[in-house]
Length: 203
Image 1 (tube, rainbow, N blue to C red):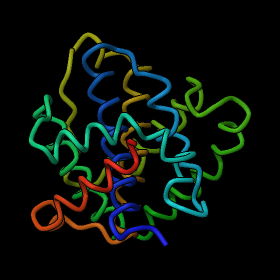
Image 2: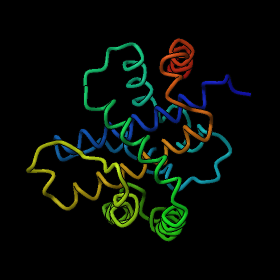
Image 3: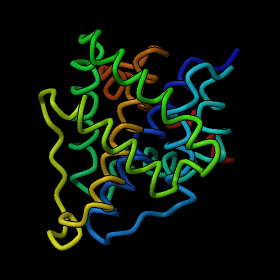
């Protein structure tokens, strides 16, 4: 059995990793494929045997774990990232309370899954399909997640699709975090335990 915070820390790392790529794309027009792929893959892994396997193993979450360690140690260098994470957690709670939208997202993911398996979850066609699914469903809920960045890139359809796909992945991680017992009080009451868990995964 995993220590109590390990699963929660991995889900939070997935959330941070997805949103860091959102921020990167919004500013530069490009994501880091190696960091984006595990969180995009997680959208399609609904019945994984463990939290780590949702992302293809804990090592795939090293960028997100480092981001989480910096945040828990008050060393984060992007003040917009925690705000984006909080907005995502709030959006996930709203999403989970809308059974029809949950069903629509599940059906959409199932329809896109064969394409993702054939092409890879980071393929432009898959990103476009995931982005459209997010736009048609979760994006209509409030609070809507507002992404700031370079207007030049934010006006490009491919960039917008990838951002939306990664926001879908971020909501997936926020849902997983809550399912494994995560809550916002733990940032105040269990910071040391969470940092210890992050350190174990990064060793």
